[in-house]
Length: 621
Image 1 (tube, one colour):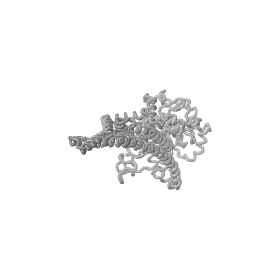
Image 2 (image 1 turned 45 degrees about the vertical axis):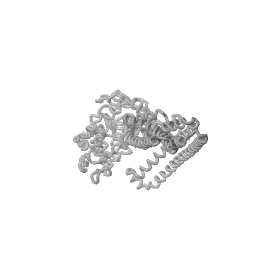
Image 3 (image 1 turned 90 degrees about the vertical axis):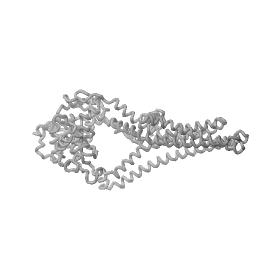
Image 4 (image 1 turned 180 degrees about the horizontal axis):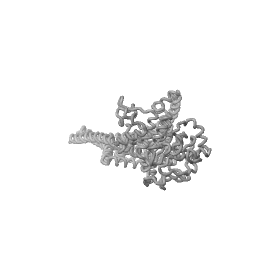
């Protein structure tokens, strides 16, 4: 763990985090949180009250045996009170546990919704940082058993504390020395447990990257996506060895953590045994001097033993709380980071309709924690209704440029504007409504067709005419009609009832992604390597269709294929993060620069006379 992380004290049990969690319980159910707190107090007091009643019962029974008058009624009253206290304790504990069971999912639901919302607000460049990703992993772990147990830990800790106070008051009422003997050892015991908890969190913190690696390798070994390549290339043994190596590193952390806990347990047990022995010695001395009745001894010895038991229980709850609360702090830290990002997000609407288009001035960008500039001093303009192709060698910065234009990255120098409005000033939701994209690694949600296309927009999801229109546009109309439930067919047979799911090829999934990008009628649409999974004939078909449906909007096409770039009105050529050429296909060929070299290297691929070059109006004519 780095020094900076220690200076941030992620392992400390901070009252602010504890208070925030408590307010979450209150927000989830005010009545439930209040009832749970009251029952916890009652449950903590009842054991000491039962011991006191037991003392009076024992003394009354001894008095009865010695012939004291009127002791039967006294015995009956104390016995009845003991029965009532026992029943009350049982009912209070049962009701409290029931309330906790009811509160846990409510609190979990609140925080899980907050986490999902926060993740959606997190800027894309943050996902490039390993520290941020590890923070998200730890934040997600807080939503598991740690979160559901936190309320139980708090309730039990309060109950133990109340019981300790009650038992301590009983012991103090006889002699302060007795209370001092059993209370003082609590100080080193707490220190042992908190130290163990701190060490445990540090071990968990250090193991986060290892656990993430193990999870990733398991997905490769057991998941469907990588299964063909794992088998074709015989990668199972190699990946399994990597998983085992990671598991050994993780196991080392676990064993180290366990040894710290064992040492802490030995220390606290030794201190508590000495304290109990001291308390019994004091009681023995008092009895020898005739200062205590037998009933007093029963209650005091019971109080001393119960005090040690409650102390041990409190120490374990402190240890659990001290270890798990920092994980909850990670969740709150993630939520706070996302909230800060949201507060810094733009509030302006996207210009509609676009009149001036996109302007980029002196744009430079580097990824977080990377010393190298990915884009360097890039400037260009894209007019309304213009189709522009962005081409260049691998690693030239094409996809990064697109993500900046779409407002996915904000930590850049220079300027990106839509009709003079900076992309940083436009609200993310407004960007999403007006800009759309198909990336190389597009998402496959594996939901019913209409949900795949609508992507959360209920008005589009219900508009069958629009959905069928876009299916026809991308050439999937007949294919979708052949499915058992047409637009309502789940696009993954493993997630649908037998025989009712639909399976798509890679090229068909590509068309689904293109349809999803176009169905909202965006003003700006980007296709980042849109035909990577298509054969040449399908590529020609898709681009011809795209040339038609892109009319009336800005279209940006990213491609390695020079033949595809000829469809654009203008071509931007990137190389090593710089814009080195700009012009039409013919103009760039005449310049005899990088574009011409790339074109000549690929010329034999493009023999279709229908792709004769020039603006899209010429292609579609």
